[in-house]
Image 1 (cartoon, one colour):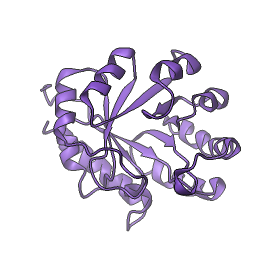
Image 2 (cartoon, rainbow, N blue to C red):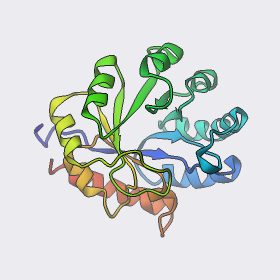
Image 3 (cartoon, rainbow, N blue to C red):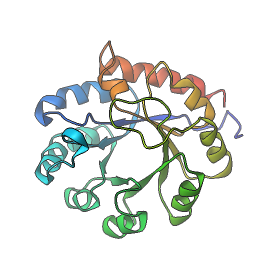
Image 4 (cartoon, rainbow, N blue to C red):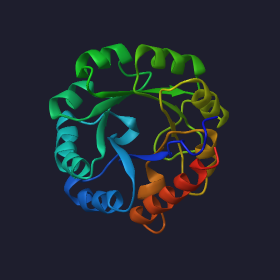
Length: 223
């Protein structure tokens, strides 16, 4: 693999809880973002039973949280909704295989915004997305997760294969905590996408971010 002296360290890709009150959550988010290096924040709201949120709920959450992310040089990504990402001036959109296609999302948000694609545990889907121009591909779920029902289970080897073969960054997602993150960093993940592993951490979100930063900095040296 790449010489560890030139290896870019893995970074944290925060995902919001599925449900929260934006103004109240803002202080929690600030504490997390101020605790360490965070590359990006994805707004991923879901109503009960995985139902899509109302447009105005996405707007309110974005208005409350995006300025906090931008003030700390953290990219703000909206889940699923390319149209609202464009309307609200977000940095990009993340699309799943059951959402719109990468090509449709790119057409809506333009060439200057991020478009990331869920690829589950599929090498084929990842190669298609990478060749089409995706800014990153996301593999998972690697572990059990309370955030959503996983469609697939991925193994760390897919991160190694991808990172040794392609230049498009890869994101590991699904049930990642400070207890199980190290193997994914060593395997080659460029980003760890974490939700409850930060927000539900026993010592609080800020402590979780600090712990993730230590793990990613240390384990990135050994790959």
